Length: 533
Image: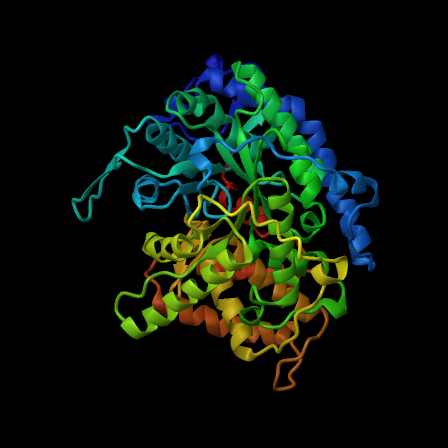
């Protein structure tokens, strides 16, 4: 890693240097990401302030609607730029963190796309981020390999591999290990900028391109900022405008009202939209957390057949296909259950049914979290979607109004559902604090979205004194009692050296604080970066 005297002006690196980091943190790459930070920091901060202003309106009862000032965009007859040849068929996409073994397995697993995730599936520790970038540099150049010290197995890339997409962090997350002019830089620009600087030209030389997924966007203005970043980055490297392609995750309730506008802002760089279902549910709870009429039942009862979720999914398909671009489906988080064939078949049948619903509705592809699900998802899409995509299905029969997107699912709240939220929330946070952001829990591959839903639901239930189906009021006292019991279960089943006490303390603070915390990952990030000088 460069010494302090070799760093570009105004940059301070507070992460610990290790062997191999110099290939990622070159002076040229750091100057590139610092340039993006300096140019776009003011607008990023302004848009985050705008989020806070909108939240204040939501907290006193305002509800979103389709924007009257952008009606001309929604009504206009325009199209996204032509889809690059290598990503016309995206029927199965696998997502996961950027550790070396995962990168190889994901690229090899038979999926059409691998989304390398620096966001919800990765704890943003310094080592995870820089090693992840190094792994992707090697993967793009097809020189990546891994020898498992436990099994002795050798991993290397097959001749044919999935197309690579990269998901940087959202606009709200800082990168405390890198200071630009005395302030932590944007995690989003750090992740995007390093990958783009090192790999864009190499990807193009190999017949593909720099492809991205963009998370947590809440408005078309935030999409516009990404588009401005893309234009600047391409110009800095001397690349043609439109080289970058990005799929936006529609995983916030606010973005659901601005799908056309988001595509419009990115129309030269768009690779479509995706149904980020778990974060979408979390966003719905978060944005209407203060409204007693928006209390949700157990999350197990909130499925993609719920009216508000089905409406948003169908609207996404109609919107994307009208603009001649992909409408990607959501995640199947199941993990194959090796030691219980009956339970495994039940789980896999859920995957099949979910994918049959998606392809039947018109989605052009879907997500899986485990290589063992690729064949199942691909089998469904191969049978029902013989062409590379089904963008030709315009779904003009779909009509979605604001009230459809805002319909509250009905159901009950059980002690089992409350305990599940406590157990899974603490279990996930504990692993996250140890550096693992993609965690197998109870035969599901969980990322930060599940923990966010878990703690958001409990906060909302406490806030509005919701009742369990047996009549008990959910209050802080009950939640502390059950939290203690679930914590003991987790401690009993875990190996020594865990961080369950830290996780439980953070979880309790998140559910008992008077004001709803926007993101669990912000205080958790403070905990893992507490020792930075």
